Length: 181
Image 1 (cartoon, rainbow, N blue to C red):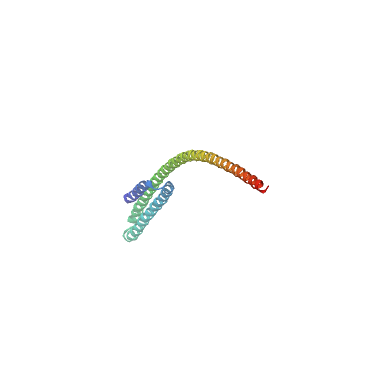
Image 2 (cartoon, rainbow, N blue to C red):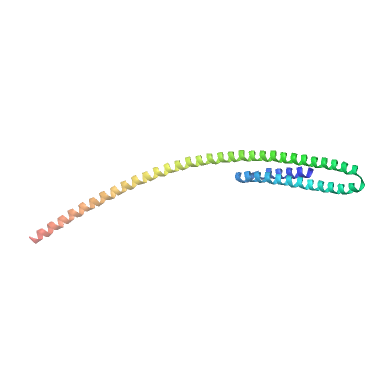
């Protein structure tokens, strides 16, 4: 029985050391530990019960040879042993369930804290992204305005050159017309 309690304590201790793993695996691990602990407790209780029953059968065979009184005494002793083992197994199961429930609750609290941290980080990232978008918009707007001004200057230069070319062409036409007269 002490070994069973030590095994349960060891499993729960190892479960506590694994808290650095992700939140989802903590919850699953705690559930698995509970199931495994309960299975082990049931197996141990079954093994102990089997051993006790085996002892009872041996005692019965020896007692039949010796005397009826010895058989009755052995039956009473065996029953007491079985009851003790069963009560110890039930107590171990109850302890394991309590410990597992505590582990699951702690894992849930940790998960909730992690979710809250992630949400606050996401909100901060959203705010940063919004600021960056506004900054980029302002820069883009100023560049668009500068490009518009540059284009307007280029159009004015082109128009001036076109006017000058027109005037030159007009002078050339007039020269050609005068020469043709």
